[in-house]
Length: 272
Image (cartoon, rainbow, N blue to C red; front, side):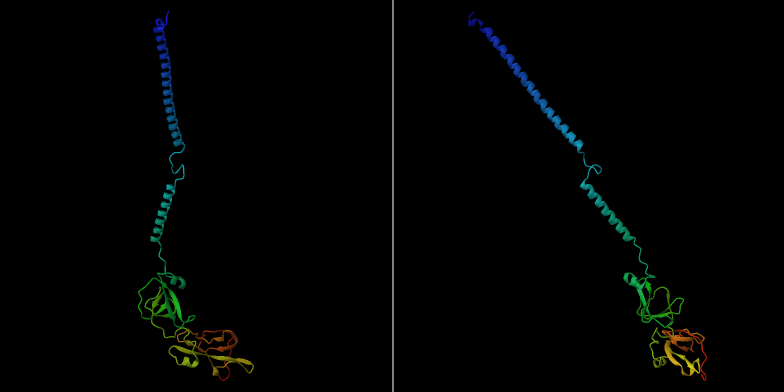
C-alpha cells in the first residue's frame, strides 16, 4: 500500500494524539489553576487565622489586663478632683478660733482676735506698766478711757479704749495710785501725794540695856505705798527682804512691797 492510501489513517492518528496531549495540558492547567486558587485560599485562610490568633493573643486593652496611660490620667484626674473637693469642704467647715482665754502671743498671732491691755491700780502683787488682760473677738471700741475691775477681785485697771475682755466689768476708779507709782517715791514726795499715797514707818528694833526693844520715838521711813492697800489690825514685825538682821515694828499694820514678817515681837523701848 502506498503513502497516499495510508494518509487518512495517519492523519487520524495524529489528530487523536494531538487531542490527547492537549487534553492533558488543559487538565494540568486546570489542576494548576485549582492549585493556585487553593494556595491563595489557603494563604488567605492562614492570614485570617493568624490575624485571628493575633487578636486572641493581644485582646483589647482593659483596666484589668494591661497598663493603659489613659486609665492613669483618669485616676489622677479623679484624685485631683477628689482632693480639691475635700480641701474645699475642709475650708468651708473650718472651725473658727475661740479667742477667749488665749495667751498674749497666741492672741496677737491670730488675725481675727483682739488683745486688751490696761494699767493696774495698786493692789498686792500688781505689775507696773501695761498689763495684758485677755483676748476677745473683734469689738467696736471707742477712744474713751475706762476703768474696769476684774470680776470677784479687788484688781482695777485703766484701759485706753472703751472695750474690755470677758471677766472684767466697768467700775468706778479707786482712790489709790497706779501700781508702783507710789513705791518709787521718796518720803517727801510721798507726803506730797496724800490722796493717792501714804508713807509707811517702822519702829526699829535696837539693843539697849541688855535687851532688844522697838524704838517708837525714832521711827524710820520704810516705803511709800498706795492708799487703799490692805493692812492688818495688828502690829507686825517686819524685815527688809535679804536683810533679816534688822527688824521693825510696823505700827500701821502694813507690810510694804520688799518686806516680810520676821522675828519675834519685842517690847517698846522705855520712854516710847
